[in-house]
Image (cartoon, rainbow, N blue to C red; front, side):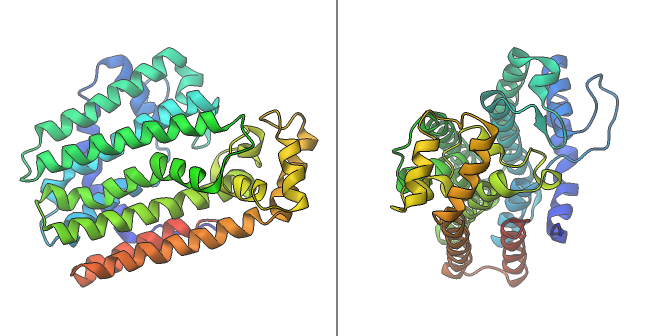
Length: 338
């Protein structure tokens, strides 16, 4: 059963969507077409389309962080737009790097428009994110801009390591978690605190929200790792066992390879050449990951990170309503069909 997003996600999407569309309209025609197609706003010919544009998690967290800081949300809207644009940049490039031909149940942008065009559109979207924040008049604009640029550096490093790990069988679990923290948790930590930063909120509030977002980001990625192997295509938009087929050294795979079990040793042998050689090897690898305890470890670690995210909210005085909504968002993103 698919988990229904909390009301705060759709509410924040309604707040941010007009500003996000206005920002994308600033792009040159080619990148604008690709960016809007990627978001599901229109088809490859620019005709309006009503398709899923993702979970809108990051802008929801940005808006909630402004509310958690006790201020109005309007000054945080450019920050919410910026983090969503950075996320779009990462997905446009990620689909190219992973060779994924599907995104949100339709052809990925690079598969429609070509690899060079999709990469350039991603570059344009990333630059636009910085421009949106630079143009903001929020009191904490400089702090918000610094947070976004730092998160981008982490994201690039995480993606670099993700690719570098693919041919290896000696990756440790700490290195794997650091890679996942860089490529996912850093941007969620930025999103969960950037609204407060834009309002120039006190440091204890910003720090609590940043820690909440970081731990939630790791939990989010751990659940994604589970879905990348065992998730239903109707939920993930990708074939079952997709991450194993691609040779991804995701957390359940690494935990299994480092388990010291016989199944873990066999898994190392199956993945010795990077990717499994045949579809039978892909299926066998999934069985071995589970037998070696990789799936169980990943579930337990996701639960631990969720608890740490919620505990971080206790370290600052936050409005009760915002606190409840942050808890609801955290449970939503970690209770997807795993």
